[in-house]
Image 1 (cartoon, rainbow, N blue to C red):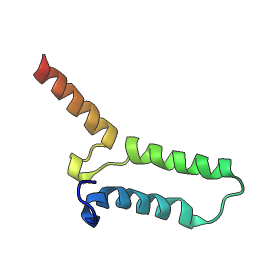
Image 2 (image 1 turned 120 degrees about the vertical axis):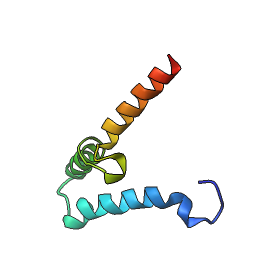
Image 3 (image 1 turned 90 degrees about the horizontal axis):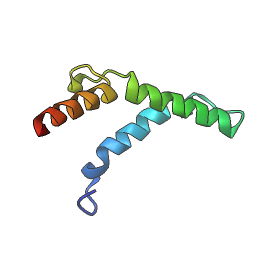
Length: 77
């Protein structure tokens, strides 16, 4: 966050938490802490590795980052 009291600074993080809650926590309760942790970790894995994002050219965030890093490595070489 860069400016005190500026709600737009934290918008991407708040969006992530809202999606996480909608996809996992609002569906009900969990029998154990481990059950909740497993569901949340599965969703985060999906979010980063398999979810296609239109702004990233319909790549997953991890695929986009891999391509970006490879391009940066070629520029530096």
